[in-house]
Length: 94
Image (cartoon, rainbow, N blue to C red; front, side, top):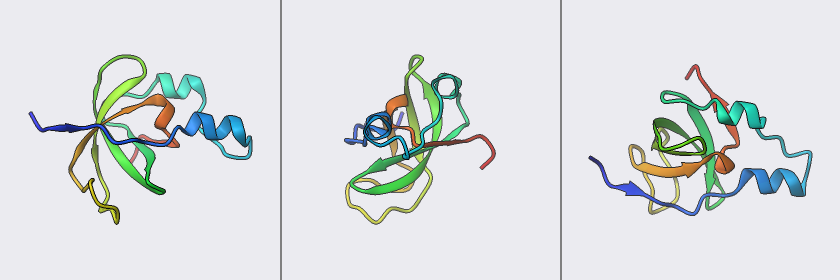
């Protein structure tokens, strides 16, 4: 089992509450996230795709980073912990 990292990801839902022009997936869509989906998250001003590898409950997941990143501390292939509040975008067809 790979080490699961717990980065401080941005809260997309909070950003949407502060600025309605900032779009996020609906609550129904967030509740439908499943293993194999790709979600976009943000850490240290860098957005990147994560493939969901397990659903811990209705709003918490582990996922594998699918992008090469510029920032230090996270990299392609790392497994991270995230929640539905961190999700900016969902793609089921990557």
